[in-house]
Amino acid sequence: MTFDLALVLGLLGAAIVMFAMNRPRMDAVALIMITVLPLTGVITMDEALAGFADPNIILIAALFVIGEGLVRTGAAQRLGDWLVAKAGRSEARLITLLMIIVALVGSIMSSTGVVAIFIPVVLRIAANSGIAPGRLMMPLSMAALISGMMTLVATAPNLVVHSELVRRGHEGFHFFSFTPFGIPILILAVGYMLFARRWLTRAPKPGEAAPAPPPARPRLSDWVEEYRLAGREHRLRIKPDSPLAGRTLAEMDLRGGAGVNILAVERGGRFSKRLIQPRASTELNAGDVLLLDLAAEAPDIKAIAREYGLERRALAGAYFSDHAQDIGMAEIMVPDPSPLIGRTVVGARFRSRHDLSVIGLKRGRQAVEGDILDTELELGDTLLVIGPWRAIRALDDAREMIVLNLPAELEEAPPAASRAPYALLSLGVMIGLMVWGVIPNVQAALIACLLMGLFACVNLNAAYRSIHWQSLVLIVGMLPFSIALQQTGGVDLAAQGLLAATGEASPRMALAAIFITTAVLSLFISNTATAVLMAPVALTVADALGASPYPFAMTVALAASAAFMTPVSSPVNTLVVGPGKYTFMDFVRVGTPFALVALLVSVVMTPWIFPF
Image (tube, rainbow, N blue to C red; front, top):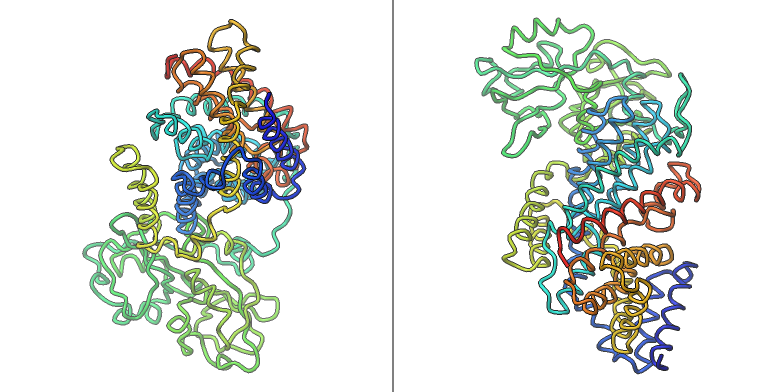
């Protein structure tokens, strides 16, 4: 061992210790190493900074922006709503669907972001179904980790390994090169978690509620009960021969003539349905679906449907809760002074001025029933309003009222829900270009980012905030170690050590050794940093054996995503520790056996798909 190699290994050891202690932050450690490594004379400053010019760094940043677009438009959250509707109260069905959805979504956006999206969804399901959150949170984190085994862009280690292949003159992996490994591992994970969930936490006894903390804010369902809204909601479709077709709301005056309060109009668009806020000038079309609130004194809904040529449609949730991505509620109070005092809701033109409909009224603690729209408002009245989330958010600027309560769903409501089809279109363009291979992957991702901006799925401020700069700096800071270890012979030394450990055994044993080394190293430093260090070692082992580099590179990528064994192995695991009430040993007990399953699948399947 040369002095230069000993110096580089000493710095690497110091970096690993600081990573393990998390002092200072990982990105700070990376910046320290970028600064110190050139002082050894092993690499130049230009080589230390070369990572900032790596196309994969730009690609990873672009993928963060694309993921933000999917979140801001609600495309990812809608899958969570679908999960709630389809899973019902079956724990086995819930775990199966949850893991499949999370793995699929995580294959095209940050796995950490996917877990952050689904934690409140899972907690809500657990509270409603009586399932302990601990029986669902670890399946969530495991599926998010496995999502990194689905596509090339699913996780940073995949791109790091791909970049090392390209740097050495090989073709690199394709977009779906990882999918043949991810699908069987996901199937095994689903079956494994259906069995292993019994190790996580006891099932609640009959009649015992799941230990979920109460929300800090009321939920929409609380107001539906408090204001006695159940049974007042209706969905009616306008038939082609309806007298409403082609007429404006002002012409028909449904509110004055039939006591019908139109809350929204559901209209089919080019890509999906959209909700239109009702105004006097809104023209109704045949096929539109009206979301109605019917006062207690209003005529029977069947009579209204007959008179106006409407067809009743099924309701998917209590008081339009299935539309919570688009419309919400808020409680407001009439203060002193306020121009609302002594006026009715209709007389004050409340909906025209605020884009919100009043559906509930309380005086004191009691909800007022009957025709509240023509009731004169008094000082201290509490109004329950419903409408688009943008109008709910704008209430803080209204001087004539005081916002009392905003619902918990406000935190979950996407700010650009109407742009979801365009976000999916942008994503589809990126995937198509990557699969087709006509342009570099980074260029395809940048095109998708520009489309997201063009379609208003994400703005510049949100795009910059979405990028996890700490992760990018960490990758850039670890790349100089890869260069330094290759120039000082450290990579060759590590490769010789792995070959010596496996002896004359088959190349599959070398794959197993690489997988184990990568997985163990990931316990102490991030899986991205591990991939940076292990990718050149694995390719050097392949060269020494005279074998194809692809099975060895793929093994590093799969092992880097198999971070199931401890809560600190990945941020994905760390996020679910609190909601799932897990201990360190929960991850060891459940994660270690499945890490061995992933090892076995990788060693067996990799040479089948990428022959030696």
